[in-house]
Image 1 (tube, rainbow, N blue to C red):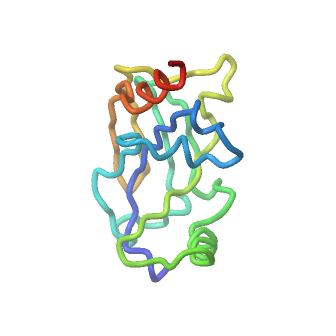
Image 2: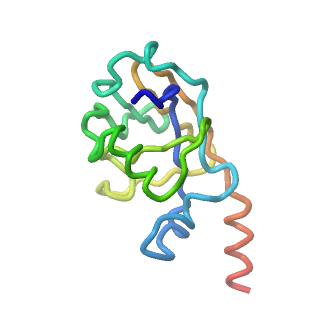
Length: 148
């Protein structure tokens, strides 16, 4: 944990159709402008006991996910250790953790974001990140080429 410079919020706006092209999620998580980071970096001292911090995700004001970070399958030290086994971590690198329960695809009925929606990611002691959902033009272009 001595290597952690700080914490921030991240909003993973996956393109689900592309995320399922392989057994790995990489294709659906790498379109331009699909991930929001910020609004600032909070030092470990400022954040306090991050393990017990609450994480809340809201879609248009409705709580979709709510948990504490100690609910993560792998803790922050384990994630750092694992990432360092396959890549050299450098100052400024960012590690994004997984998500808590409540993902829209697994709701009954499923909940899908659409252009015009507002997503809020809030972590106690860290901050509030607010993003608007817009049509992903790259996704739309790929889709039209595939059906041509």
